[in-house]
Amino acid sequence: MTNTPADDDTSAGDPAGRRKAQARRVTASVTNRKVAGKRRMRKRHTVAKVIAAALALLAIGTASAVVVIYNHWNSNLNHVDLTAQLGDDRPTKEDAEGPQEPLNILVMGSDTRDCDGCNIDGLTGDGQRSDTTILLHLSADRKYAYGVSIPRDTLVDRPVCYNEDGSEIPAASQVMWNDAFSVGGAACTIRQFEHISHVRVDNYVVIDFQGFKDMVNALDGVEVCIPEDIDDTEHGITLKAGTREIKGDEALSYVRVRHVGDGTDPNRIRRQQAFMAAMINKAISGGMLVRPDRLVKFLNAVTGSIQTDYDNIAQLADLGRGFAGIGLDNIKFVTTPWVYSTTQEGRVEWTDRVTELWKLLRDDQPLTKEFSEQSISAADDPDGTTSPPAEGQTGSTDGPKKNKDDQGLSDEQRQNAGLCT
Image 1 (tube, rainbow, N blue to C red):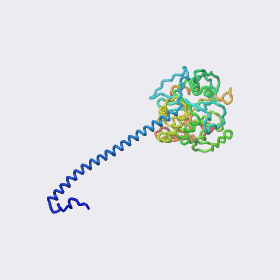
Image 2: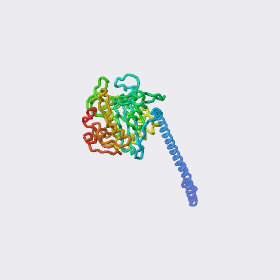
Image 3: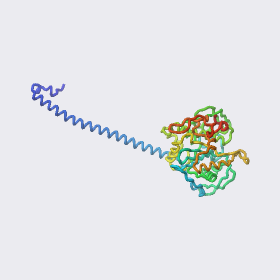
Image 4: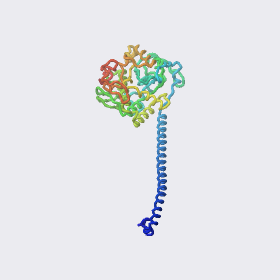
């Protein structure tokens, strides 16, 4: 055992010695505390530096990861500027009151079958057609939005279009709407829309079947209500009746199948509108914007499967944020007013009411009661009733909408479209 100064025989019998030893001990204690304090301070400084360095590395690493992901998304984006093919006779855009500019985005669905499970109807032959055309309007005050669907079987007079090399594609009379996409792609479809409606298109998006499936899968499915079993043996489409979430090939089959309801293209569009409304509802109500895993999946799906004139993913994100403050019941889908053609069997023609719809778009006005009562809302549940607004959203929750004035499709209209009532 090592003796302390207090145990030292030399000082044990000498009070003075004990006082000297105590003094030595006190002096040594003060010195040691100073040294120990400096060591502890150095240790704390060292720990702080390590933590700071780790945080700095984490921040740099996170920022680098964000840059890598952002660049990956942008590299996936098929950016194609069609300005040179749109001509110099485009309509001008009307001034609108609002903190921002109203936006008109023409969305076209390409019916290419070049993906697994996409050739659900046995289409043969080369080329692509515009399976779906929707003009999406976002108001200047960002208080409402609506999509205007154009039946692909609509008979129109197609204007002169232009190829990439500047050569002309001759005009044609009384041809189907989607003929423009077949002969001149998205540029011809935009020219056709602007020429007929006099509504200026700000941006465009083309999405194929694979992109559609990827987007639905990124949302982990979309809820639908199928009133009766669908068994289309001709095209190999089988869907069981009931209310449930569908995704992948099943979702594509649902929006593409014709042999439900009355089987017409305009009513198939109703079903597509209901599905898109449910997608918007799921994205907003399901918190996709606050779920990084779902947001990454969704952006990967979007950027990898579209052609657009948006320069980068940030611009698409800004477009998405434009919907942030809009209540679900203020996001609606309508179809251009139509009647069956008397000149070409199986085709449709617009009624005079379509001019009113074009004027609403040009003047940045919300849908009138006349059009709203024919619309499908993002607030509708699959059975046609109104779902409660999502957190942070506005909108009525006063129950069923379908049988009230200005409140959506009637039971008969939903039945004709193959939707639940």
